[in-house]
Length: 239
Length: 105
Image 1 (cartoon, rainbow over the protein chains, first blue to last red):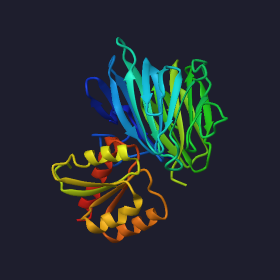
Image 2: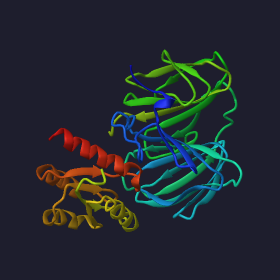
Image 3: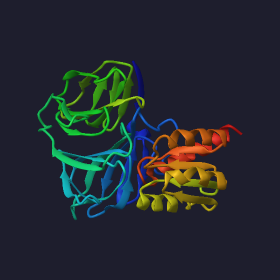
């Protein structure tokens, strides 16, 4: 098994006032050649947007873009005619394909919105753009990993054009579990949303992450009550 | 980075996105950029204009893509496969190109 540790305080940071963002990988003005990607996971931004503020209309193409609100409400509008508010407990996926314009704003005039935005390289380029948003299972049910994203439209969670699987869960202190990696050529990027975990011998706190590959399973243990984990199971190379 | 002279050619068959890419790729004080939206016209554009970096986005299909990769390799043109549309990843890709160029000096 190989691993790479990404402590939270070593992420790229950009505070624009209206946007406070932490970049797990090189993005915008943050450039670290040692942190360009984990396999086909290219972007993991941990964003906090001030009330009423947001990202104006901008384009994307050929990228699978997943947004997971952690608190607050995010308002989305795109060139395909979709207009929606995505809340904590939901997940949004966009396949940018041949091109899409969208905007994202904090829907609240009083409260911040905190969300993760994750970009995955697609399996194939120039697909027809698509948008989807679903309500996740009750993630507060402790000690269970819930699949929230997969490559399969008929499987649990939302789907995207890549052989990637996301799982999330909240765990009581001392609970241990194993996760089976979906494909031999995949690795797993484990991101601690809240609390702390021991993952394959490494202690990780809030917003720390560890990338693991060349393994068929990973073991983790929650070190405090209410610890939340996101596992991103993703190909390490283009097939 | 913005002060290093770079001649870009940007290809994207999505015209609105191409316009934004070209605007971004003219942001540097010494950056020049030609935008192309028809892949059939791309090689002749490269042959007729000094080019340091080719940025390929939507519509970079075969067999043109393989031919372009060979052409770029033989003519010292750095190829960036651009995903994402905006500047979030683009400046990273340009910085990586400049780092690579610096190392090979």
